[in-house]
Length: 462
Image 1 (cartoon, rainbow, N blue to C red):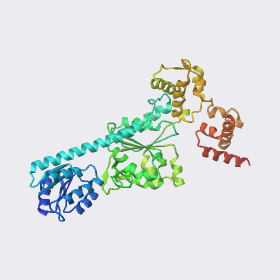
Image 2 (image 1 turned 90 degrees about the vertical axis):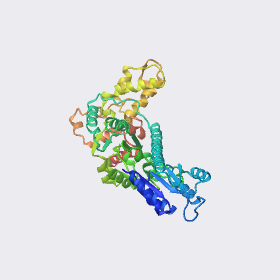
Image 3 (image 1 turned 120 degrees about the vertical axis):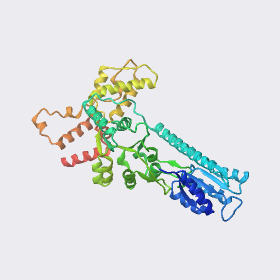
Image 4 (image 1 turned 135 degrees about the horizontal axis):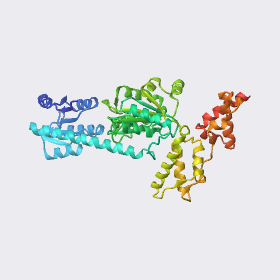
């Protein structure tokens, strides 16, 4: 794409001469004959450089109009290079222009070779500065990102199927929706998709949509210009722009404010957006991966999630199984987490006793892999011997639900799904001494979801 240069001068002959020179060098020129026209052009076009006079019709010698224009430009755009030109140039005016925010100074009449060299140098410097800002912002996001504590463990058949599917789709640019309970490692799999893709050398930008408030959504995702709103003291690069040529991972996609879902959909469809405070449309190219622990079809039916947005994000849907459905992975994961904890605290590695292994394998793991990670780190800290004991784990054994129900008699076999659910709820409440919150957590339910089920069965009994 050709780079655009804005020429600002009140002399039509100079505008024409500069325009012809720049077009011959492969640039697109935009002409403005006053500061007002220049400001309008900056708001409308994405210019690579501004080549401007310092003196206009109101004052042809002091350069004051040009200095004011530079100040106005810098309030909206800190990076665009500005090269000033004047036929009344003095050292004082040149210094004032540089102090106001200009990047270089050329005196009329100009030498074509020197002018073109200055323009090309300033454009290269601006591109390098913009790339540096993107790298700094990207680094900030990486440091804030919670990294998984271990690599993927896939001893179970369930996880082998997931990895097989991931390898199949990763090299395409298809949008992928990862589903599964909290703590199953969806962000880790999103990272794996990026590493397996053709975009692996470009950025992987992760956004927790549940943490992006409605009021900050546009600024966070689209970015903003300096002065776009009261607290916009400097320009900000948004997540879409940061993800250009790489992968954009939107975690907890179901928590996107409904009022902002249409704006998100437009970017996903067109790969275009405007920064807050700017009318310039930017184009981006990224691969989309999203994740949720919610039932998005239910959210669509409830009116909290757009159907067209769901269609856009789930070209391929991959469910990450809960840890209780991949028991073969529990002990390998536990050992890996224990080794990571030893490395973290610079201490000798520990073994896991047989009794502790049995407890790990019979626990329900409502918090999935994330909970297992925390449990093993705690065990490493509290263990007083060379092997982790059950007391070090801080969990109570809860046999898998299927083993508690006991389908060994015809009477049990003929129970309805509702009756089985009621029995599970009653057993969990009994186990936790009536503590509904603990019972809910052990089943992987929120407190409100647990109470709804409890209330439903109480009404049935009446």
